[in-house]
Image: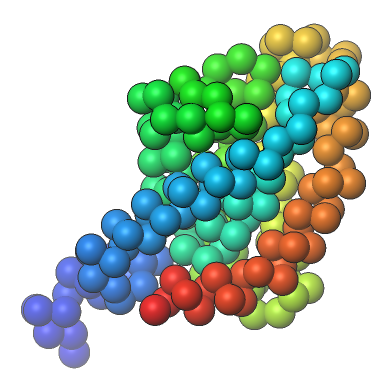
Length: 192
């Protein structure tokens, strides 16, 4: 039987996948997650043939989502976008503003990417390196399902694959591998 005192935390754990952590710790993790993504965004290379830069953001998003779980990971990405929207230089190359323009779909997709990888890790996909990689591939597919149509609005759907997918596949594979290596440590740190 669950005591009344533990009922709210039990419901939070059951409904939202939140671990038994204090609200202050959860806020600190969300803020830290947003800063990890902001820092990873500064690793940015502008390609001359596409309006979408190569960044370290997907690595940051995968680590944050996998380490914090679905809800805290999603909140971290929402905070990250809010921080950039109010003028903090947190987007690729120190940019800021609302997530609009050709790469806006990637930024919006990061929220779902973190949520998906976090949810899958909460449900056992993070227990082995292979399953962790599989969860991140699923999350990448979700990202591209949002980002490519958005990009297509700006460059035309006939150019989406050449400008928004193929130039990033090798880098994304490397980021998946690095995130898979980083997640066990990140998970332990987030559990405190």
